[in-house]
Image (cartoon, rainbow, N blue to C red; front, side, top):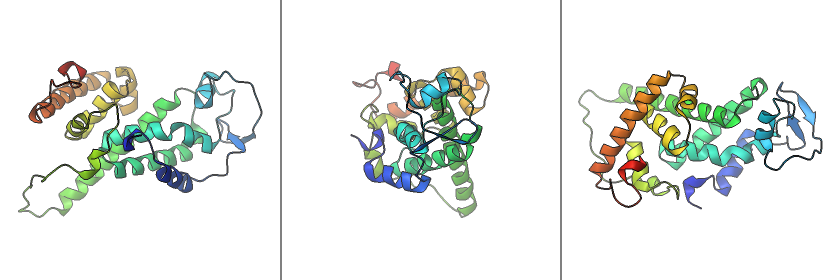
Amino acid sequence: MSRDSGLDGEAAQSLMRVLGSGASKKRASSTGEEAEVHNTDMDPDLSGTGAFDASDGQVPLPSWDELVREHADRVYRLAYRLSGNAHDAEDLTQETFIRVFRSLSSYQPGTFEGWLHRITTNLFLDMVRRRSRIRMEALPEDYERVPSGGPDPEQIYHDSRLDPHLQRALDGLAPDYRAAVVLCDIEGLSYEEIAATLGVKLGTVRSRIHRGRQALRENLRQMGVLGTQGLAPTSV
């Protein structure tokens, strides 16, 4: 399995240690109270958080350990595609689940995956803005940008379904454009879902996706890979 296709064993264990365990014998209800596990015959296609959402809260949420196991890889993939490197992806995944843990008692049945998308994406944008402020405060007045001598070594860890050139091109987009393009063209969210995730108007989503795709094509063109096999212009 490629590194950014999911958390490796060590990272997953580290995540579980940080987030905490011991909830495997109980399940968290939508009110945040703990309820004893009851053996129920569930449709295998309706399990975990999907069953909770479909039942409108009548079925208790899975245990905390189960929540992490069910969603950690998905959150990590999104975090990697947004951040472009394994270190930030692991940090974002950890921060996302810490936020989930703190807010779980107020979660209302809806779309748990959509909630995770929103938290992960907003944490990524917050991270970028925070780093941008720090860099601007730290730079000397006579600072000049020096082009990188080569690609970041961590960028070699790419998803098997995501071409490494495409990941590099995504990394070159402005954060707001990158988030919109990733959520739409890679995660498959609708414009309405993206608007809810980012907390912006539908027109803003359309504009960011349009401009993001244009910038993405230009980045790919500059790398000399646009239109090659597996990266046809229509795929972005």
